[in-house]
Length: 245
Image (cartoon, rainbow, N blue to C red; front, side, top):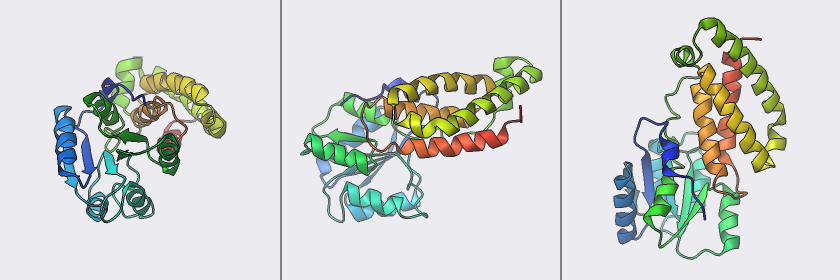
């Protein structure tokens, strides 16, 4: 399956922090070495219970979970984390990995909430693409960055005017989002334009969430789009922070 290009992560200044859960030691070694080669920090789990414990206590940028492990496979791990409001990685992007999955099983995993399915044996190119799903850059980004906006747009008056227009644009998208989500091509087109507007206005947090959602759309599947939940939240925070037109 296609993956987003690795250079899509250039907006983040921190190295991705990954949890790799697999009960096969050689697989853990290969995945860990590959992800580290691409600049990531990696923590390992050899069982489902160990993965859940780590993901509850740590905030990872991406979870790579094997479908069959002692103590629970990928689906069980994801469900337990999603249903635990105290889990620090409960809303992080997750990838299911397996050596034996037909098309129907892959679609079922996507519908469960996984961002992608990694078929083993995999290549370095596959892992490079998977790393593009990491939710880096989303944890400490301000809603509005006045310095960036002034650097891009020039004067406070221009920034103020552009932010008023952006607020109106976001209110419209917020009303149309459910309909847009049913058509990935239309959604991608709107996101492309919105990302440009965010750059002029210093809407850094929303811009990062747009990148995350764009990366997911590039996977070209109809799985559950978990980044859309984060996008809605970030969009509402941005609307509240922007001045009235």
